[in-house]
Image (tube, rainbow, N blue to C red; front, side, top):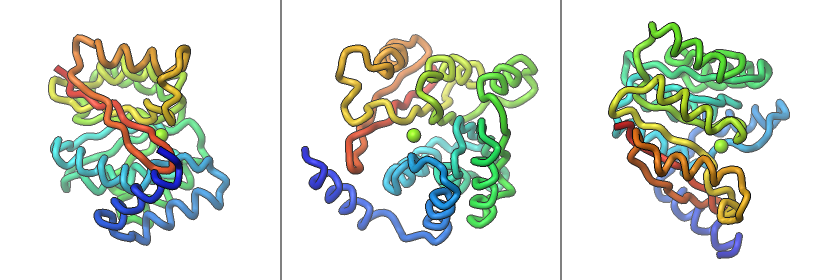
Length: 215
Ligand code: MG
């Protein structure tokens, strides 16, 4: 599958299912202007994640890796009136951009960005044990951390929680021996507390999400 084909396919689906949205366009623009890495999810993936969140009926969503808030806007929009998105971000300057983007999208009231080391924050949440478990967890931070993020996500989950991890196909690089995402995918697939699958998603390359229901 060449890149042109993938882009055409991606655009075709986007043209059918994704409405042009000023707040989302502005989120992409402002993130770019602020010099954030342009690694946000694609419009089609945003629609897909929002649909998954709505189908799961999630009221409490945890996102690991806020970046400019592009995926967070989709999650926040999926939430019911009393829902909350807690989004963890290492970089204060990313969080600043994201705050503005959530504000512009009209979802700021439903979003709490916590700045700091996500693992430490998750560990602390788990130890305190005073938060309700999350209904959906989206792992989309630095890939070296995925194995630990998964363990910590499970500690903050209940049976039925949906765990989604982004970028697990990596343009097919995951097929190569030694690719670091392989270990994560193997653990995710074989985990006794998870029932899941990888869904490949196309944009100008093929990537994908691992998703699973906590048993
Ligand atoms: Mg990602």
